Image 1 (cartoon, rainbow, N blue to C red):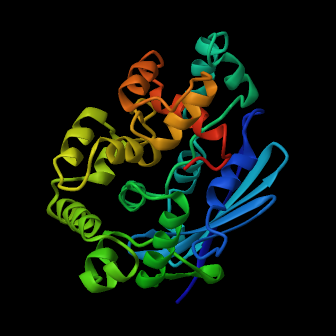
Image 2: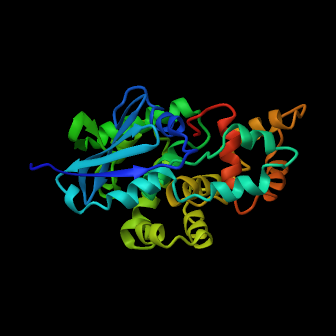
Length: 297
């Protein structure tokens, strides 16, 4: 196999939070699909059914991004890099509007420029959201790793790429169950893959022209996929910052601590509270996540 490469230089905003981006990709200490150090992230991805790697190398306010793989020459490196970094998210407008908010102003000022790192593809975001339903982050990371290993898409730099739709569809139910997926989650994954394969769920088209309500309704119609899963996937996979993550346990827990409540607020209270931050409800949720964990979830 002939490896090609492509490199570009990006100038980052003054308030870009490099450590948050690195922390997000450092969640799995086994470094199966991502390898990180204090100044870089190398991530394996799928492109045109071939594994490749993306390297992010930080130097103060600048960034060198490199892709390496058989199909690297026609890879939209700048567009993908800017999306993964969250550079087109409206954080400045959000912070300007709510920096003096009596409940969250101080929180926003602690983390200026907080962005939500994106998954490499909407499919990766959706699969990660399904895996993470109603289990701890640590358990979800372990299942994700076993799924990547089961798919065995070997990329340059001794990494394995998160599988694409076709690769997951080729895995048997038994093999997927061995990763730790419950039967209900297996059925949700199969329904998702079938919808993508049939054209009912055109994820790539939606990525280039996101229509949050249409995506929400189409995904919600799948058995085993509920509002939390869809809103999380919209945030991580489609750069949509207005999904309401009121059902998220960590969001509710951190909100209770922020407001000094006697107990963790329920989903209804949290939904009502987040509504005031529309169209940035999910970005507000990300700030609540960051109170406890720079990596988010």
